[in-house]
Image (tube, rainbow over all chains, first blue to last red; front, side, top):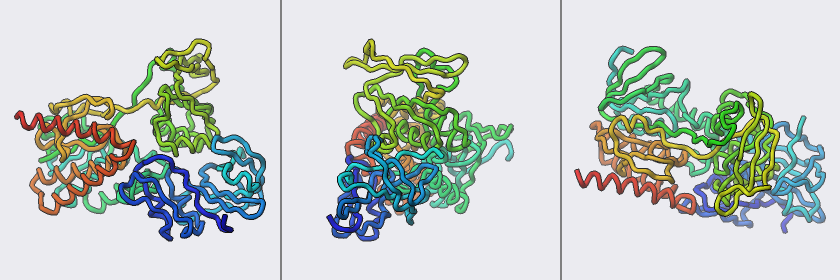
Length: 139
Length: 368
């Protein structure tokens, strides 16, 4: 795996939707016609900028960066209150089940956000394909 | 406003279909009035705080309420008259009966577009009338329009897109969603919408139903049960949840009163939500000069409502004497986009249902 984040698209159904393709400034995502085609990612063109992560109406795109024993997983987040960089939060899998404590390494918005935050957690590399969110904060 | 108003095109309903119809008709030079019973235009878009699916032409990636703002602003810029707080209570040939802010008057138009939308279905079970049991759309109105959280611990019934999206938005509003109950063996909505709430820790129980709701004066407890292959509750599978809110997201029915009153012919389509007025490829009903667009023409999505609105607005303008070759081309393009929206595993069923309605119109038209 390369040492930059790349998009991981979890869009399993043929639904009429293509903002990921429109959002990508590098032409790395292709939906084409008809609009119900599933997106295809050209890994070589993906820079991990995260514009597609915030643009996806299904919140179905993530960024994963793997390096050494650790991985950074970025996911879209739309709940208050927000975590801060340095906080330790509970990472969760696709079923919302806890996978352990993980430090927040980035909290940011991008041009396509309109309110959607991108949260990046540092996790053990073995969990790179498991962590897809965090437990909501009650504060 | 006097007792009898006159215009080229009257549009009933200022949601995505109605505003889109108004803009399309206005662009031909026709005079257009939109009549909407709510205090602001936009219809259901106003409470959709999530980003929309679709393509750029359908404002994909934009949040619904922003689409409402954009459409309404475009209408104002281009000289479409938007009458809010105006209730169209009846239709008499090409004349609408309207009550607005305590005054009754009529609006006569060369062509009328009905874009009245749909209403939520209910589900009857013991305790369903308790306060705290409500439509998912009603809950969405509370949280996203009025900024009121009507309950803190919630169960959702229905795992279609509405149930999944409103569950997510209830979480955003600070409620605890204990789970989604779905009678069907599979989740009906998009997998990505389901994934969003599962990630947030909300379980989805397929093949389950609500048995009863209990509480003294208001909802306190809901009992659910698993269903066998024949759809019957399995004894011993009952589970009770202490909740103060139960949301029902069990489908929508087209709001067709005006179309019935106008004398439109209908066909029943379970897939499109109930009785739907027969209409042509131009969205014209069996009453000449009366067009339909959006959920009233069959319950679908906001993106299809926008395209149907465009089509109906253009066709209504042509009917009112504002036709042109360019307009015909635009109608064809809108039809093309509708076809694309109705493709794929989620869309093809709706495409067949829609084609059935058009075939019904053609049979009627041929027999005339």
